[in-house]
Figure 1 (cartoon, rainbow, N blue to C red):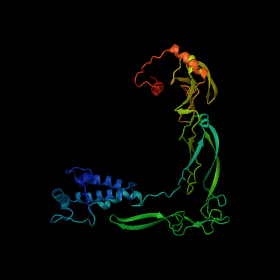
Figure 2 (cartoon, rainbow, N blue to C red):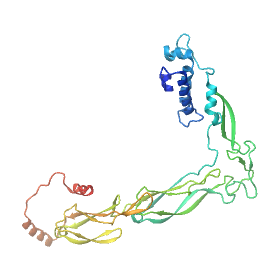
Figure 3 (tube, one colour):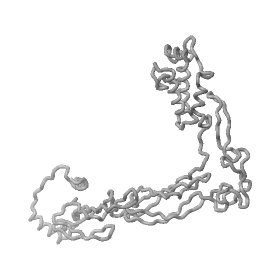
Amino acid sequence: MERTMPRDYYDVLGVSRSASKDDIKRAFRRLARQYHPDVSDAPDAEERFKEVNEAYRVLSDDDKRAAYDRFGHAGVNGGMPGGFGGFSGGFPGFDEIFEEFFGGFGMGTRRRRSGPIQGRDLRYDLTIDFEQAVFGAEVDIEVKRRDTCDVCHGSGAKPGTSPRTCPDCNGTGQVRQVRQTFLGSMVNVSDCPRCRGRGEIIDSPCEQCAGSGIVQRARKLTVSIPPGVDDGTQIRLGGEGEPGQRNGPPGDLYVVLHVTPHEFFKRRDSDIILEVSINVAQAALGDSIHVPTVDGEEEVTVPPGTQSGKVIRLRGKGVPRLRRDGTTSGRGDQLLVITVDIPTKLTKEQRDLFEELSQTLGKEVTPQKAGRGFMDRVADFFSGT
C-alpha cells in the first residue's frame, strides 16, 4: 500500500520556521477551534484536527521542535536515535486551551437540532398548455402529503389520554454519555432511544395515526399561474409542504411548470415565432393574408416581391414580460417567418401560364453571395444586423 508523506508541521499551522512559541500557540488555537470534530461540520474535520494537534505537540515542545528542525519527521517518529516515537500523554498548555475553546460548547457536546424543525419541502410537476403560459391561469391541483392527524391533533395519543414525560431523559429528548478520547473526557449528546427524541412516551397510541401524530392526506390547492411563465418556472406556495417536527413550521410546496409545445407557435424569450407559407403569386404580387395569433386572427399585408425568409413583426402580439416580482412589463412581438411554397404538381392551365411567364423572365442565373441563405437572413433579423 502506498503511504502518503505527512505534511510539514509549520505548513500545517501556517507559521514560519522562525515563529515564536506564542505565534505557534495562537495558530493552534485558531485552527483547533476551526477543525474540532465536535464543533466543525467539515467532512475532513477529524483528520485535520488530528494533523493540527500532532503539529502542535511537536512544535510547542523545545526538544521535539529541535529534533524536528534537524531530522524532520524521522526525528520525532522513532526513525532516528533518540526519536520521540508515538504521541502518548498530554502536552504543555492543552488543558488550558481546550477549556478556552470549548467551554461555551458544553465541553465537546456535539451540536444538534433539538428545537423545532421545519417540515420538508415538496415538489409538484404541473403541465400547462401554451396559452396558459402566455396569459396565466388558475389551476386546481391535488397534492398528497403528510399532515397533522385531526383525531389526536398531532399528539399521537388516543383521545382522552395524554403522553407522559419520558423517565429516561426527563422530557428533554436527549441523553448524555461521557466518553474518554485522546482529548480527555468528552460529553456526547444523542436522541433518547426510549422516546426517540420526543421527550414523551405514548402508552395509548391514537388509532388513526398509530401514535405518530401524522397521517397521509390529499389536499386540494389552487395555483395562480402568472402570465409570461416559461417551461421550468417554479412557483412557491409557502407553508404547503409537510408539517414540521417539535412544533416547527411546515415546509413549502414548489410547483414546477411544464409547457406543452404548441402546434404552430414557437417561443423565443418574450417573442412568438410563426412560420407561414405563401404561394409564388402572393410573393410576387403581394397580398393581404390572415394569420393566427394568441389573441386571435390578424390581417397582415405581404409586400410585393417578398422572398423566403422575410420576417414580418407584429408588435405586442407576443408573451408578457414577466418580472421577478410576478408582475409584467409589456409584451413581446409575434414574428412571421415567410416561406414561398413552390408547387410540385401543376394543372395544364397552370403549366401554360408558368411557361408563358418564363418567356418574359428570361433564364439568366444570378449567383448569390456565399453564406447568405435563408437561415442567415433569419439570424440577421434576430441579431438586428
